[in-house]
Image (cartoon, rainbow, N blue to C red; front, side):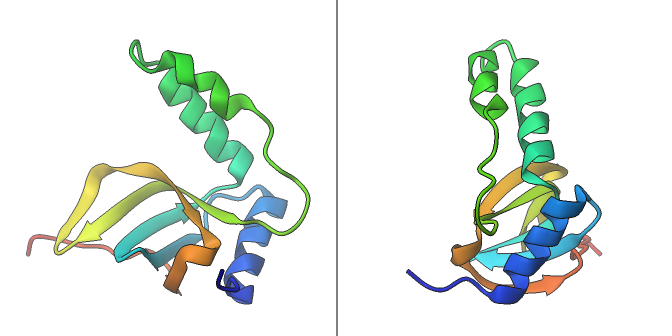
Length: 119
C-alpha cells in the first residue's frame, strides 16, 4: 500500500476542518484525470443522499449516505463535487458530478481545475 502524499492529505484535512467547498483540485487516479472542487465529506454525503432521495429508482440507497462520516485520523478520501473526468477536449459529465477518490490512489495532482473546450 503506497503512502499518501502528505500535502494532499493536509489539503483534504483543511477542507474538512473548514467545511469549505471552494478548493479546486485536479488529480490523476487510475489513469483518469478528475478536475473539480473538493467538498467536506459530510457535505458531499448529504448532497449524494439528496440526489438519490429524489430518484424513484434509487431512493432506497439514500440512507446509506446519511450515516456519519469517520472522524478519527487524517482524511483517506477526496470528495469532489461539480467535478468532471477529462477525456481529450470533453468533460464528463457536462454538468459536473460527485466523485470520491482514495488519496492513496492519487498518482499526480495540481491546484486548480482544468477547463476544456472544443475550440
